[in-house]
Image 1 (tube, rainbow, N blue to C red):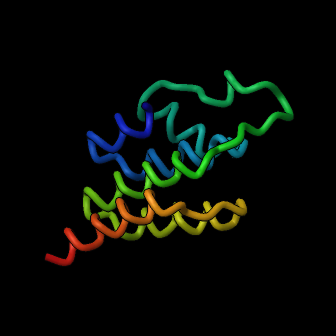
Image 2: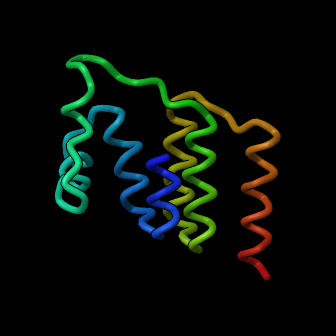
Length: 104
């Protein structure tokens, strides 16, 4: 829901920061603390990395495309691939629809 909320306000940089933060990167957590006073890493047990499912990445990519943030969407897709995830058919359909919308 956090990614959807950030997508609704068009803060795609914060979406990317959130995904990076969930991988344990403190610099991304600092971005979220500065903008929204939210400390994500505080709520994650030490030496624990949450599993980020494909659907979360898909939601993030779609939100960025909805706001014509192609660069951010691409960075999220690369992060997804780096973490060994691939898009399922439903996610691909949503992302392709947003790409088509951008092209019109």
